[in-house]
Amino acid sequence: MIEPIKLVVLISGNGSNLQAIIDEIESGKLNAHIAKVISNRPGVTGLQRASKANINSQVVDHRNFASREDFDQALMDAIDHEQPDLVVLAGFMRILSDAFVEHYLGRLLNIHPSLLPKYQGLNTHQRVLDAGELEHGATVHYVIPELDSGPIILQAHVPVLPNDDAIRLANRVHEIEHKIYPESIRRIASSQVTFSNGVVYFNQQPITRHNSNLIWVNDSSDR
Ligand code: GRF
Image (tube, rainbow, N blue to C red; front, side):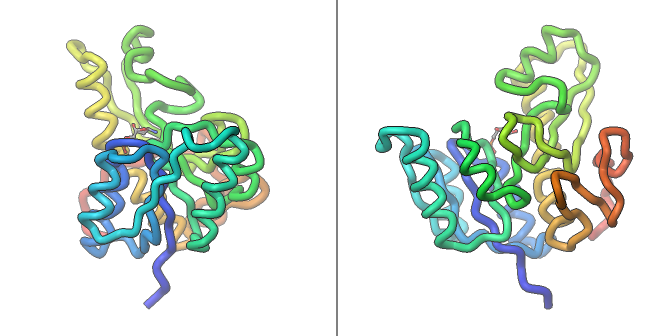
């Protein structure tokens, strides 16, 4: 049996993406081990999810540090203690310093609620509605110093429906996030996806924005 890929998951709140990863591991569909969950906020639901799944967790509260650099250093110390293969940002609502990002380059993943490069930043669902878009989605990408701009691993699309509001649309996006985040980790764990010199490869082929390999298609067959 291949060693499970070792993850540290960073959260700030609800942790539904964390839960999706936990569920896939527990059901045997994802060969991964979550060594630790770290939250920058105490008392959040995601920490309860970790505890329920018997996963170690730690709070590194950004309010206890004088500067972003000090906070990031404490975060790095907490992460590096676990020696993870991947650091998974799952609703982690802090901007990370370049030094942090460079330290984990090629090992740091994020999920963003839009079809990047469209709608970087916050409030994506309302902005998509305001722009009258017909489709929306979510993106898993490697993190680079430029916010929401790293090379893409996987994207999933959802339709924008006529009577959507931001909450309904967000729920639809969340459902697909919960599929593509575990799937991205699975592809990395199996070496189907690799990262080298800022480029993501799928089965040794570079993934470009126009490459169908980066579009997730709902596949109900058993893995
Ligand atoms: C998700 O929409 C994710 O795309 C964004 O933050 C949200 C986190 O949700 N980065 P949850 O905490 O995983 O429920």
